[in-house]
Image (cartoon, helix red, strand yellow):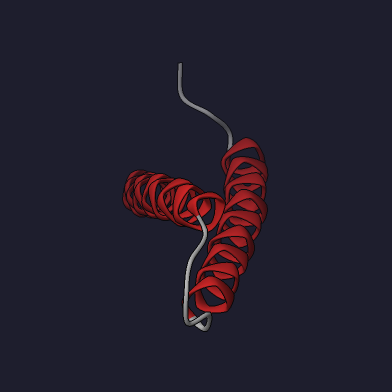
Length: 78
């Protein structure tokens, strides 16, 4: 069943909000990674956190790209 223009607009607004939050979280991961990499010697905990942050950041990037594709598809079909 086709969505109304209002429903599509609301979906896009929610997607844009989610996209903004994901980008902010991605930037926070980047900031934290920079902090860790400023240290001359990393502890084992730092190394674990660095790996966790890198994986999380990659996951966020994938989600951002997925949302951008969905938004593009929604705009094309609208």
